[in-house]
Image (tube, rainbow, N blue to C red):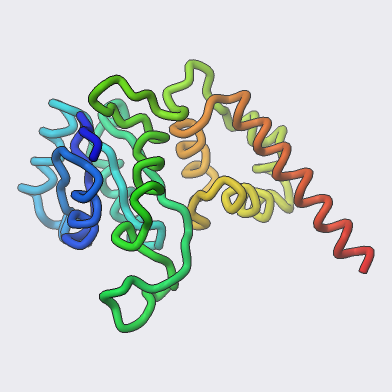
Length: 212
């Protein structure tokens, strides 16, 4: 178990139950899309964000990103941290069939992966355990994205998708969403190194495919 200072926002009760096996702290459900019309619950999230900060941990599918966007639109960015789970395809044990997109939600992700996602987002864990990265002084910029070919080029979308896969980030991130995520998870130098490595791996794979 880890103790987390910030309140953590998840989508549903099964996500909360799963996370409760890892986190000793405040975990709030959005009740799915209920957060879009539940003013009292959104008011609670705003209060928690002001008093202790908020970490958003939603599923990596389209619904999860809509909920994340709604919360981001209602709460100042300085009070908000974003934790991302990777795209993992499969079916939760309690379900008869996979979700529409075939991805595991928070409830199906292994606890060590959830722990890593929280730490990388910069969650404050009691005892002074530092996140693996996050909160770097020098931020990744849109200019960096352009220089790395992640924006402004015909193949930028494919490059971003390959990078997101290499970094274990959800495929549904937009260019701006990816920028937000990498600034939450990596320092600028580390990110540029990882992006260049992923690009080189992609070019090698393309060359091998072309030689066949």
